[in-house]
Image (cartoon, rainbow, N blue to C red):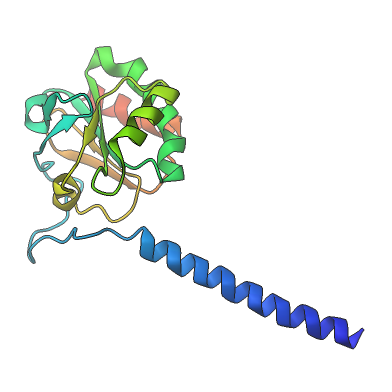
Length: 188
């Protein structure tokens, strides 16, 4: 019995070390690459104007955030290799379908510098996504928004101010709907 206990303790320690090594490896692999901004530029946050960007959709159409003033915008930074990102997409799609006629725009900004556009297209098609998928090919929008974790979502009001930032996920449909409904009720 003592020999069995010793064997279990040794293997448990090896298993624990392996799990810690895998976790450290995952953190290293999923870290943002070259995403720093010059010192003194604050991260976009609630109550401040959302930094403007212009990106192409996966279909090649250019979209600029500044061109969407007067609308409520949900900017969602995501990647196909991010399970929580993919998990929250159906909830985002449901909110988009429910509120797009009232002025909601969803911009799903894909980390195309760390992802593949074809993978994003395939995922969007299989998930039935109908909102614009933007390709951040050089990581410019990610740097501008100082995204440190995926998914990260910015709820932007009609004036272009960030109303809320949600880091991590997946976001529940009820959370998305409650934030969007509140912003849609506000006057521009």
